[in-house]
Length: 427
Image (cartoon, rainbow, N blue to C red; front, side):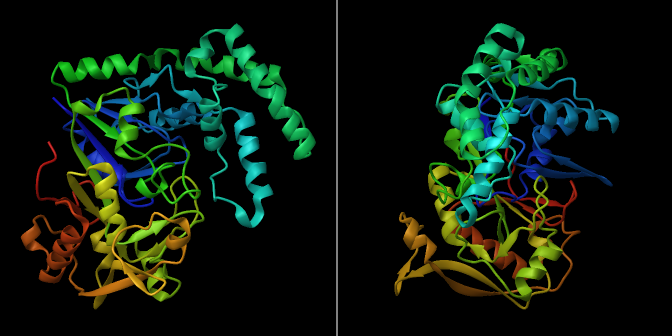
């Protein structure tokens, strides 16, 4: 059975948790393949709301094995806290698997993340300050600490000493902060070893064997396409690859084993943090989208910047990910507008541009070219089929599908598990 990839097709926060949870009952494994606890998912099950930051959404589906892949960076304190919180609410977390090759976030990564961002001032990126970027930097610089290192005190100490030799110089001499103790870090992290040991596995082997046995594996990305370090709005991006290519490297599953790549699209657009955002609204409409859509970051608590749907970005996401399907979320939020603008192109220096500019300067100066679509006033939260949607809502979905370049196979009409219209099965 081939694997499925599910990822964000905008700047993140599109509702991937709802989509993953919807599929959770039909898949055997749900794998987080990149990012860390800087990416949050909200999942509503009945009258219960769950905010997940590091754990795969599949952990809420009985019978599904949740996996943290090698491409994820793990803060062990956050991991254990999140597990405890779910256990206290009666969620079984015993099936969780963690790759021994996943890298660990340490206190010095978090400290460097925060002081560096403050030092940048107006040029700040808008990071969450959770140490994600510095951890990925250490991984690429080959001085990172992995989950498996927790089980060998000698190796752990050597790696921490090597990392802090340079980092303490930077903290003390450049940022006027106190040096971080090697002994304190080693002691704290050795304390995590026994608590997570039973979760650690060769996840690449487990997942490939599962596929050979005909099991269904869902690869779940954090953040979104436009935050990809290679394909996003650099430098205002995350430090990993949320795009489909990252699903392979972050899980150890080869590309020939992936059958479908599902992009999650919000019916409008949001982003958190700094960086260009052509359709961003600074008026009553923007505030209404924020209020009605509950646009506040699950992990950061920051208000999201809101704007109209951007078809240029959607087409770009289709191209760089090889998307086979879209899951359109939060269509219900648009109920009540007489007309709904959709960005179909950009104007840059007086020229109409229909594809995402490859120049950072051009994208920064891009002005949206809007097409107005008729809105609807009917409550759609109880709709069960596409035909039961108001005609204008149907037309809106069809227009977005045509502009975006891939079929819309499911539509979210509310936050709940059952408030979804499935047009074509993903499995």
